[in-house]
Each structure stands twice: as C-alpha cells, then as structure tokens.
Image 1 (cartoon, rainbow, N blue to C red):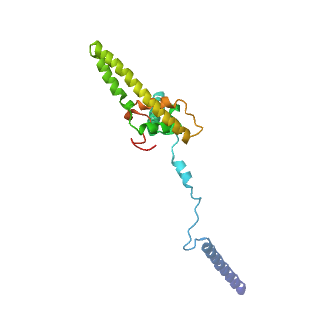
Image 2 (cartoon, rainbow, N blue to C red; image 1 turned 60 degrees about the vertical axis):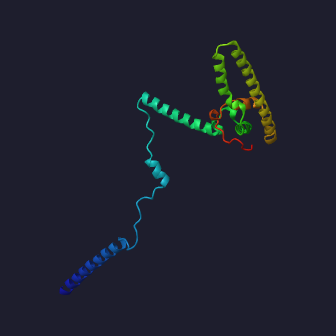
Image 3 (cartoon, rainbow, N blue to C red; image 1 turned 90 degrees about the vertical axis):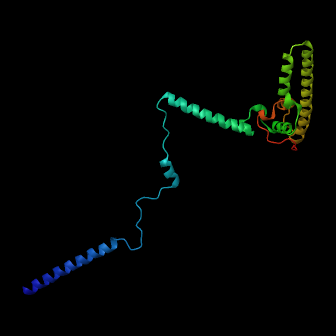
Length: 207
C-alpha cells in the first residue's frame, strides 16, 4: 500500500508539472513576437472617403428671406464672373452678335487703327453747343457739319468693313460675313475705352 501511494503521488506531481508546461506553452504562442506590429482592427480608410466624411451636408435656409438673400448673392457672383469673361472676350460670355472668329477679326482690325469715328461723341457735343448758340448762321453751319461728319464716318466705316470682309473671306472661307460692315461701323464710332469686349491689340499692331 505504501508503494501504491508513492506512485499515485508521483503521478499527481507529473500531472501538475505537465499542466504548468502546457499553460506556459500556450502563453508563449499566443503572445506577440518582439518586433512584430499587431494587425489593425480595420483597414485604413481612403483619402477620398475621409474627405467625404469631413464634408458637411448642405443646410437649406431656415426661412424664405435667407433663401432669397443666398440666391441674390449667387446671382451677383454669376454676373460679376460673366462681366469679367465678356471683357476678356471669352466666347461663352459673348452675345450672339459678337461670337465667332470673323467678329473677333473685325474687332482686332478696328482696334488696331485710329479712326475718326472714335471722336464721334466729342464732335456731337461740339455740335450741340453750336446749335444752342443763337443765330441762324450758326445753325446752318452746325447742320452742315453734322451731315459732313456723318458722311465721313459712314464712308470710313464702309471702307474698313470692306477690307475686313475681304480678309475674313481669305482667312475663314465658308464663314458668314453677313452684317460685318455695320458691325465694323458701330465698333468704330465707340470710344476705345468703352468698347466691349475690351481691345486685345494695340494701335499699330499688324492683323
């Protein structure tokens, strides 16, 4: 009986040692190894997804006054952008009468020269002053000057329009030149600073 108890005790001790070793092995295997970064719980989000989450959704105005004010602000901004684009001569902002390469050529040709039509408004002011002065002789002179100036301006515009028309047919065959002479005349009688779109060439430039 003494031997049996001894073997039983040794067996129990061995079982305890084996259990301790097993627990130690499990602890070693499950623990992270040195120098190894553990995996993240979720993948790193893309930059586009992160930016999308940061964006705030559009908040509608709480009342009609705020909505009307916001609309006026947008309209004002659009008008400013369109006006600036019109001055630069961008096609999308131009009215139909100013669009196309033929009209751009006409503007450049007129803007590259100095004509009598540029001083039309100053001459008109002078004629008005002459008409205000009492006296039949002065009025007759003023009327004669008005007809003479109109004839000179129209004749000059017609000659310039003919040159532009010929040049447009050479450079842009197949493009319409309808109303080109009148377009040249109307731009020619406008002061250079008041022309729209703004001149993009200097006087004396070769077109």
